Length: 463
Ligand code: OOG
Ligand code: NI
Image (cartoon, rainbow, N blue to C red; front, side, top):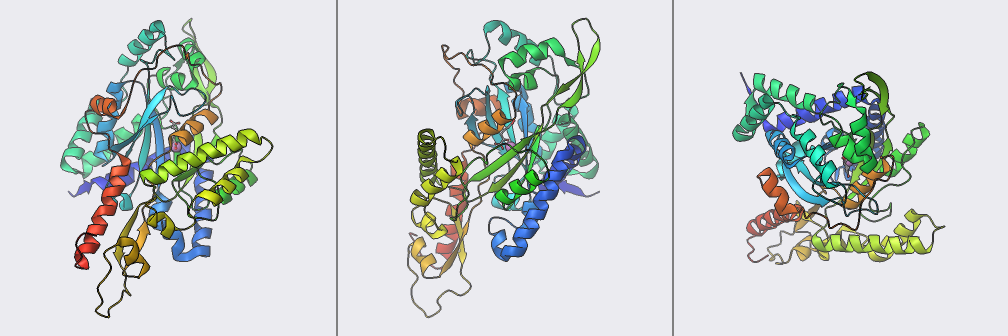
């Protein structure tokens, strides 16, 4: 019997989740269809340029999901499940601080980290944990009730965790076990038909809809699955024409004529779904909950720390100008700001150290016996090597908070008189007993490895 490798497990996991989610949320299927149409059109119009940030095979299969858990223990378990699929924690996002209104979670993204693994299948899951210990959201009484409730539930059965540990340790699983792992993993992320305790759910909902979604039920569920599209502005128009009401903005960088960087996302609210509710007298009534939604994204080039600081600075500028000119469309303000301050070409981004690239030898490099220059920017300029942008594989805290917010009913409450609880990368690494990786370090490593390879091939040292 043949063994199934980790990337095959990951690809199958993403595929099965997609099938399951399409059955549960029909609008998702529409979104996937429209994304595919847009991608085909872009490919036809742009040819090879359309594949500059990933092959069409990768982009068509590419998804990210999102799930939410309640406790460090659950976070630890979910990290074991994702490790089976070669998905590792990257980045720390504190969404309690990322937006004007309150989202009581901290998050990381589980994803492949190695270039070849990403190219095979980049499936990633944005994973959030409720900040139960933060007194700005939960007073002592509610915190203790929540902790008791969460301690009494089991999101991931022991058989799933054991199979996951084995896949992570061996880097593969025999076919039969692989099948069982996939079955149990997909089931753990389905919406449960179990009746929801109405009073408890509503108690939490008064604090925040996110708290109710996470701590009000006895299981977790994928709350969206996001396809990648090559032209998100066109997708937005086509979805709107089909009568699907999108949120009113595309989050992230504006549409503009320069290179796409980082991540642009937009979403729509899913319909309320019927859910059985248990009332205090023990009866079961039918209710409805609106906990799932649709999202789509376009990915651009990964920015360095410097590039990211520029991006964050420009966002601040756009905020300021938008506040001063409330009648002007934010997208127009943003485009104008970008056209003034953001370099308009990949070459400039590279030369100014604002974005990450990998390099390969140019097929038509000079062969006149001359010595290549030692500097990577010069090597590209003189056509010794070709630069390829690295695609951004991560998330943006402000967009994430915006996606959370725009899909919730109610603002939630936060008591700002209280001191927030400190959670950070080191805390999360400790809680899940594995290192939460720094995304910048990962991109940098890919870039450095390729620069070192070029230097070796051209007989250069000190490039
Ligand atoms: C996660 C929201 C963040 C994204 O793409 O930024 C996210 C959630 O709603 O649980 O998925
Ligand atoms: Ni998302």
